[in-house]
Amino acid sequence: MRKKIFYLFLCFLFFIIVSIFVHGIYRDQVDWRDDGQRYLCIYTVEVTGLSGREVQGTTVIMVPIPASKEGKFFTPPAQTDIYFSQKLTHKVFNWSDQSGKGPYFENSTEIFDNQREIIGNWIPFIAETEKGYMLGFRTNETKLEDIDYITSFVADRFDVFDPINNGSPLLFPVENASNTSSVPYGKYTKYASYPTYDTYVYLSDNLKEGENVSFNIRLNANNDPTKWPREYVGLYKNLLLARVNDTGYVKVRAILGQRLPLQQITIPDDDVADSQYTRDFYSNETSDNINATPSYTVVT
Image 1 (spheres, rainbow, N blue to C red):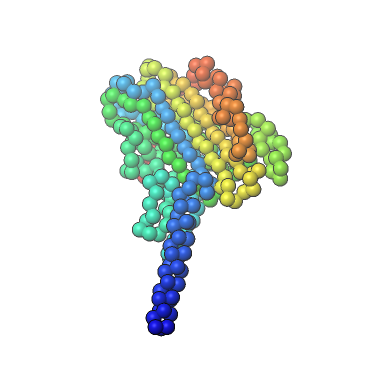
Image 2 (cartoon, helix red, strand yellow):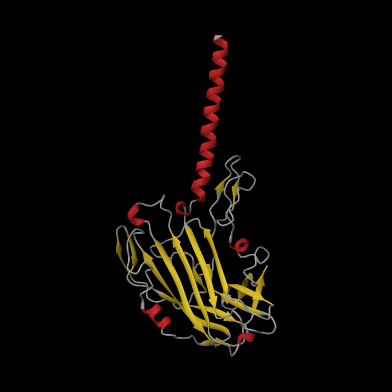
């Protein structure tokens, strides 16, 4: 009888140990699936004024792509296989456990791979242009649709205090950044005002003489709240607003705003929504064409 009880106790103990192990694995996976547990960027592209327009030939739109001001793409963190401690690259959307190996995050080439997804009638691709890398959308349809695209990614690390000068994702290409003077912020510094910089969009020649095409492109990035004290948890926002009636490479301006700490309440809620930059956009200003004979190479 005692022997039977002893075996039952061992089985019960084994069950408890296995349950704790499985719970730990599940907890780690849930943590990694939570957007608030890592360095995270959310990138959105809205291009309007295209829907219903009839064109001939291939239509190409290109927009700034998330990269540092030097053109370096983000690097996803190395995550450990929850069973075998194998190193993986990682992805956020369409999360997969990679056959039980834990969370998987893609790099830039995978995220923007033109074989993976179609946005309406548009095929996304990475283009290597004379301005640097850009994100492109192309279609052979004769009747166009607006572009509405969103993705997100994680990085090993980026700096919400001085993202322009410390290798953090911006809307690349980046030229002519304004004065980035800083003011003290605890042990760190933050920008004294909203920096701006020049970047580019591109419209193919078959869109010539049409109505304005509007661009609303955002890149929001937050640091990992599990790795920073509460007062240093924050985010920065890149915003590009432009109405364009040109073709070729068109120079446009982006603005960058910060929210430090993240819990800070601002009115309006979007830090750059009430800036002169945004007011100029809604005053119907357009951009100047700086290159009417562009070229690009699709990165495969």
